[in-house]
Length: 153
Image (cartoon, rainbow, N blue to C red):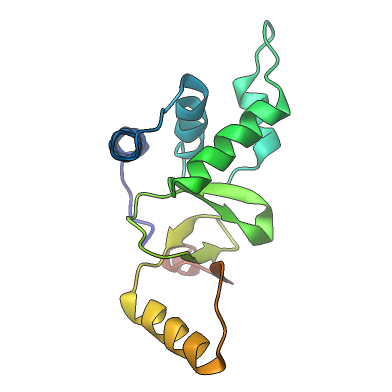
């Protein structure tokens, strides 16, 4: 978790994954959707919609909030990004999801986010839901704490 790597490669991988998903689902990765996805993948830290809006706007052109929110809705709906509820912000996703769930480790020191893809956690949550007769429409688990790198510093 939190290994040093190339964000440029992350962005390229994310765009490649997004293009593949869009091709499979017969939907379009428009220029604005692509730009929003690139900005989200610039780091592994959650970014708020209005920060995206500011980065997309320039002295010559002001992007409108609905445009950004529509792009976020598309990217989220196709599971290319996730919303970090506790921060009202977004983070990139390159995991193939089969369900409605998202689980994250969020470092309160450096604000980096790591998505948890442990199948046993999904299995346990599904079993407990069934036992209670509960049908989840969204599962979003956020575990806040300190990452190993920040703990060592």
